[in-house]
Image (cartoon, rainbow, N blue to C red):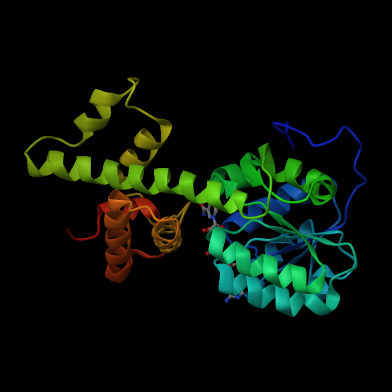
Length: 297
Ligand SMILES: NC(=O)c1ccc[n+]([C@@H]2O[C@H](COP(=O)([O-])OP(=O)(O)OC[C@H]3O[C@@H](n4cnc5c(N)ncnc54)[C@H](OP(=O)(O)O)[C@@H]3O)[C@@H](O)[C@H]2O)c1
């Protein structure tokens, strides 16, 4: 548990009871940190075997409705908007009056509009709260939460956001969190593809690609991600995914769709989208997004 960047009010928040739907790579770490913060927790996952390792810190529910019964805050961490809507619909019979749904999956502004319509129809308070950071930050409680939605919902969810995140970037209306998330993930995707192409180019020109990482090390062009992902590419240490390529491919699709809907053309993002889609097609979807490096080109 760590600081929040800004806090909407100074009023102390009561300890909420929490349900977390989706214990994949991200949800598992978030669940552990929620429980470690002393918040009573129930988890649910479609593949129950992935939720059971959390039984030492949380109740494991059989259904989404069972998971959310009695919960003040319902955290959703699933793959895409269709999964989120499907699972929320399944959870619906158990949702308590006044419960806040904290939607943390990456689903883009359009997916968030669909979830907001669902929430409005049922009178459920919604926080649009996607997260920055991969498996490591999720396990360490060091995500950056991009929280948009009503102040009352943010206040109720605050103990959970503080448990899973190092910082919360407070925004305004539902949809703004998901928009900011896509802008940030465009940087992630284009950076990773840029690293991969620089290493491929060095090798193609007869230069040891390790020298690319050595040459930029510590300079203005360097970034922790350049060394981390560049080294993983060169060591072919790509199978233990921090951020699976299939998820990154989904995000590049959301980025290009959102840009097109907003009337701008992102030519680099479009190229990265094609590249990631081809890498998934080549069987790299379950590997880390840095596996774009080893897919044929
Ligand atoms: N990994 C990252 O670095 C990262 C960082 C920030 C945000 N995100 C976003 O966080 C979300 C989760 O990513 P992850 O990396 O944790 O992926 P993951 O490990 O593949 O987990 C995906 C989760 O979604 C569930 N799911 C998928 N389709 C479903 C459906 N139709 N119905 C019910 N459940 C379904 C999976 O259930 P099963 O276990 O049954 O398959 C699993 O719990 C994605 O939106 C991703 O873009 C990921």
